Amino acid sequence: MAWCAPSDPRYMVESLEAPADGAYQIAMVRVPPELNLELFEWTSAQRRTTMPSIADVDAHHLGLRVSDIDAAVAHLSAVPGVELLGEVKQVPEGALGAGIRFGDLRSPWGLNLELVDRTHEASRPAPRP
Image (cartoon, rainbow, N blue to C red; front, side, top):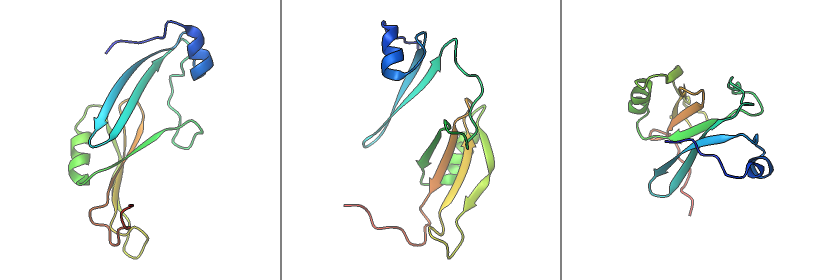
């Protein structure tokens, strides 16, 4: 992947509120049947090099629904730089969403990820029409 920068620095400032010297790499991820994700990595002389805390105003979090959380956590934990944050948890019996299992990870670049497995949810909501 190569770094991309629009030919007009005004675009960066006016349309994206990014520094005029901003450049980015983009990865397009398609998850069938119809989910498309754009992942950007930005660079600039003004770029902050520390990630925000999950509780900060500008923090980011990506939640993904999986069908086998144990397999997903095992796979992602084997990726260099991915950190499992605690153990896989389960919503207790009697609580709303009982049976849902979830786990939190951090990507090598600091993005917080949440994996959610609803395959054993006690009372699943009705599908949307």
